[in-house]
Amino acid sequence: MAFTGRFLHLVILMRIELPGRDVRMCDGGFVYWGGELYDCFDALFGTIGGAESFEEKTGDEAPGGKLTFLPPSASAGAALANPAFQGARMRFWLGEYDPMTGHIVGTPDLTADLSIDTATVKVNGTRSVDIEFESAAKRLFMVLRGNALNDRFHQACYPGEFGMANATGMPRSTAWGAATPNT
View 1: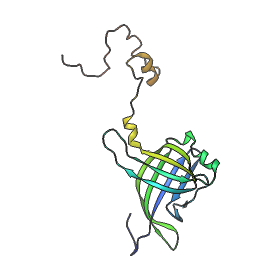
View 2 (view 1 turned 90 degrees about the vertical axis):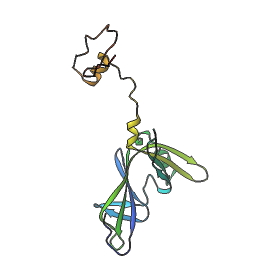
View 3 (view 1 turned 90 degrees about the horizontal axis):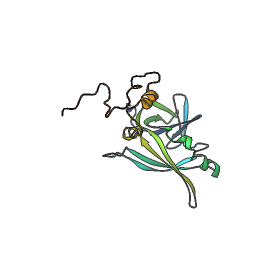
View 4 (view 1 turned 60 degrees about the vertical axis):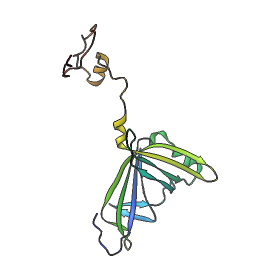
């Protein structure tokens, strides 16, 4: 993104790709990018009431954060906790806009590519929904339980490949192509 003017007019854009529709929001007012409207209000999500800082993590934790939405109705708030939304792609961009036209100038920079993790509906004087998100890097920490060196699991991965069909009654199996351990 190359800044073009003497004064910078910055905007944060957010797109959530839900099953059936996309949510396009910005941090105030509205702007157009690529022929699409990014508004500060959505009929289901309402407005953004607050944001927790996006944090980089270390060790076995993936980067993530939280947005608090203020839905326009109780039914909209309940709809935000839809389990089908979990894992939906959520992206953020930083861009410059022209205040005279309301259009984005140039190409915004993608600052985060995340996915929705959990939604928590809160009712404490005001109606709000906390949506926690995480980096796609979290998938790197997933342990695939149930993997086994047997014909059934091999058939699940490679249907019709019978290389392990007769590997029964062996005291110890060694994966094909694996180096033999030095003993």
